[in-house]
Image: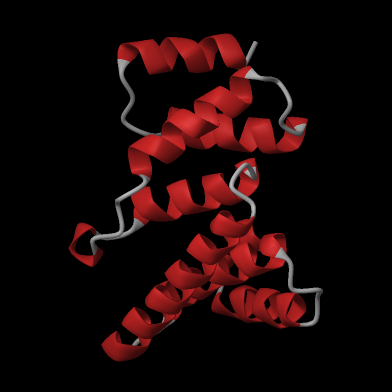
Length: 140
């Protein structure tokens, strides 16, 4: 649902409702935060946009503090940071998160579906030649 929420406000709202009814662990808190940031994209009012984004950012960062080694949460933060407009100033962890994702992928302890998603997303980013080669090696 999260992947589809980018294009559809209703899907994002359904995801938030689903997450609200789940046990509130780091995973659900992290996805709630990411979905709140996605709601900022769908909002018309600038104050609502900023409010949703900041709430989502706070929740996602809280989730990552609870589960520092969670590759999926790190990926959510990385994806949101590289996608966020620069004026929001949400870019403090981009390099650290990217390096963590490369380390986690190299360890081969990441779920295969998540690994494919992360690799596909990273391939669309600006990477150094070394990072591009690492991704090529990881995707084989």
